Image 1 (tube, rainbow, N blue to C red):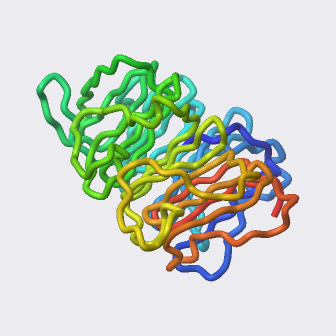
Image 2: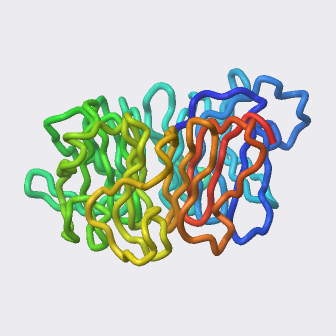
Length: 327
């Protein structure tokens, strides 16, 4: 996930991981130093794992990556290049995307550059077919509107599409692509309808989702086995597995294979949406929270004062992170 470059007063609110309380972080609180030393600290990027938050922070010339849970803060690295986005490959493996558009593969104390001219990164496990070659991939890289897939041995595979892609998002075994015209493509596992193609068939090459040819989309999010899309009319559409009501539709429906409008009051307009493994969080233009799905680990936030401005939302597997302007 890449967040808008935000000010030091922004707060990270973390829900989930089995806690009955919300964990509050200011960007500066992730630093093991006094608040006054980092008045200009900025949050550059956030990625959420199973039980932690990975955050990229900047204080002028220094750009740092921190691992944090509700009980521990650990500094992973100080980067000479500006880090603008992070993606978690595994518990011990991280991808860093720098402002110079290099992708750094970070494992323990070792690191190396694996790709250049990249604008976005995401991670999942899918099988992609390109030029009649099938390969298991774990990382999706967006390079000037084109797709690259990074194999486990760091070999790059190009996937040629007739369109330019502006956003990529990954579930456990599927991915969604948003092109510059507002069309959405999907590929990977479709066994629970998460590809939004009207069936439960797997696809090894990205195919356009029919609805998005007629309805322009501006935001996409892939959950564990479901998908969500935000239209330019500020409506949310969902598809996939509905085992815990994560689609925002009737609980009687187990699987939805076509992207279906989430029914709300006509006055509600959404600005943000994000999917976890089995939950979904959407934010309206009036900063009202809408949540659906599994809440075993308290990952569904409860509303608080309505004057709080929510800048961004990112769902982890069993957690939700909100970036707000006040506690």
